[in-house]
Image (cartoon, rainbow, N blue to C red):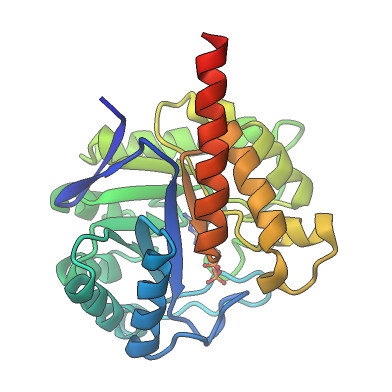
Length: 290
Ligand code: HH2
């Protein structure tokens, strides 16, 4: 049987690359802040992402941008994400929704509103109550590696790793996953994410992507979020984040070859088409090598 990811009320097939489309309902996200502030515009955008091939929609109301992310309180975060989640749930009932939050209060309300996955960029570090909440509700979880607080996790304030960044990330994420399981989260509900650009300089992000097989070896499906990020700008000299589509495609395809199975992206069509073609080539290669 093809591998699956267990989420609240269902399953996400991992038989082909999973594309997670980003719906940021924030005024300040680094590449698309302020574009989808009304629930109506966010909904129209979500429909477009699904038409372009998104398997999951990730709705976020708090930016972690590198330049001065401003933490928002749970009430404001809920005010931003809940109407969007409710609308998506009604209009696209079959599309799993993930909520990008570090707060149990926001996650609980989002799960009530129809989300089935919690995407925590702190891997349950910042609000330990999230682990039990996800366990109780049977939510799928994305545990992302980061260090520090929301305001500085995408800076270099905590980017000290010695000579084996991948080893440190795998150890810290492995511990986070074990903590989640001890709190009652099912092993099949957990996806891990190395946190590209979070407490990582460009060379750290590259090392971790190249070293993905060591993260895959933990035994959880791996998600990467490379979309439009700084390290791509550094490699391509493309300064405008929204124009980093080609670099993003390259990073995603390389990550697929290194074992990633889920891809969090802004540009869904580019990811869907490139990953499906790369996946078909890899499947043919497996046939040839047999
Ligand atoms: N990256 C961002 C936000 N959430 N979640 C996961 N699991 N993995 C990531 O790499 C990841 C994430 C940052 O990107 P974005 O949402 O576009 O920007 P911002 O934090 O400025 O809203």
